[in-house]
Length: 322
Image (cartoon, rainbow, N blue to C red):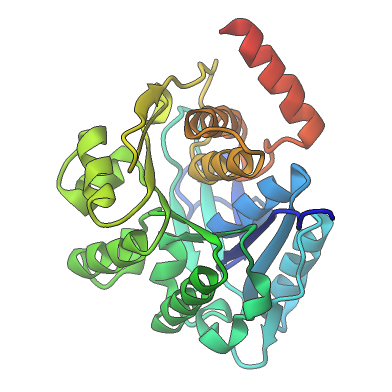
């Protein structure tokens, strides 16, 4: 008898992203190039390139941006069975500035009342989940709309019933929330329902009141989470489990930081893929650091994510350099 292969499920909003080809204020830039964007779809791309079955739940409009999004997802071998279309609402899009000094680029969203914001619990199918499934959700999706939050809650409920592991990336987007208090309360509500939480250290300060990695981890462990990996940027990551396993995994040095957007998504793909490969939480944090370091060296959210063959070469080289 063969075992059921591990699968990956995520829910969110994929958008068309227009990245400035020149530096300067977005209001003055006249030349852009288009690519796919969305925190959750970035992780799905990373998982699919590594050979995992990636299932993506979203909704687009019946428009050109929607067609572009669906084609781009299909080209990455992500299953689109659960990407539906809206007759009334348009596909979201965003603008992203071009920076050359390693600072965070400016991003402007055009996603209010988008097609994805109308996702509802009825869009979630219980057959998506089993004991070998990892459900990945983020604070970005939680910020999209009340309906999206209801959808995420339904997914969590069904995933728990089927014994799936739930991984939550806090991924705060303050501009998408009505106020800080709501953002903190709703984000932590999803975190407490998860098995593994992935906050950044600055996000942890907002959500827990502390900027100390161990204190951030303890906050979530005390609320029933099984494990926490705190992203420390260039310094790497700190991990702690309910069983008391803990430690810091060093980051990977990079020659030049080009674009920081998408690094957290790459980190999540590294962690989840490592866990599905049967690696330890420390090894998962190390792979997360590796994939995050690749992404900050290129302009684009998912362009640097490796194939399985490329990952093997990178990990072999990293092991040799340790």
